[in-house]
Amino acid sequence: MSIETMRKRQSIRTYDPHHISKSDLDKIKTYINEKSNFIGPLGGSGKIELVQLTGNVTDKGIKLGTYGFIKNPRAYLVGISENQKYSLVDFAYTFQKLILLLTEMGLGTCWMGGTFNRHSFEKEISLSGGEFIPCITPIGYPADKQRIFDKALRKVVKADNRKSWDQLFYNGTFDTALTKEQAGRVELPLEMVRLGPSASNKQPWRMVLSEDRAHCHLYIEHTPNYSSKLGYDMQLLDIGIAMCQFELACEELYISGTWVVEDPEIMTSNAQMEYLVTWKIDN
Image (cartoon, rainbow, N blue to C red):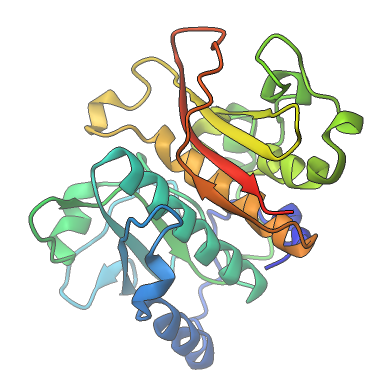
């Protein structure tokens, strides 16, 4: 999964009515059935269920609701995780890896954390104690022509706009913005974080590059009450996405490192900011 794939991937909401090929379905099933693919870098684990559709109705006869956001989905990949802070971060990291794999296969995806009927999906999926569905993605081949609705929605959520570097990345402390020139070898991994998908394009990630250039500290800047009605902090998923984008770019550039939870106790710029994890560079 390459930097090029991260750059080109975007949310697809309108799908071609043709079914997903058997070879592509087999690849997906093989991947999601491998439990190790859903163990995150901090040790948390989740799982994925594949739900295929005929006319938006499952094999059990259940109609899955996405409030008109999705047209002609051929199947859904349904995420299952525990509703704990680092469990959600770990799960989103693994889910984004799957999203990028599907992109490389030519399949369309759309991260959905709030704009679907959880109750209808819960009827289809068996959940054990402590588990819930944090997110789903429809899958299928992108339609040649996306709906006017899709284009309008991208404008509403400003999907093609991203915060600038000086709003996201910092040099040593939150007092000083980090420039691309100062970022050195982690410039491209940071840019992949900036370009990553996030709920309502809020981009809650903030990263501080240490003065010794050996640590990238990742924080979340919470949007107050953003997903409180859903019963979980959806923005934690965005942090897992950021970790995935950053690490995959580092791998491609041969920058080896490890995710660790070692709070550097940097003074934050506001009460909504919370430290989560650090990328510790090996060399």
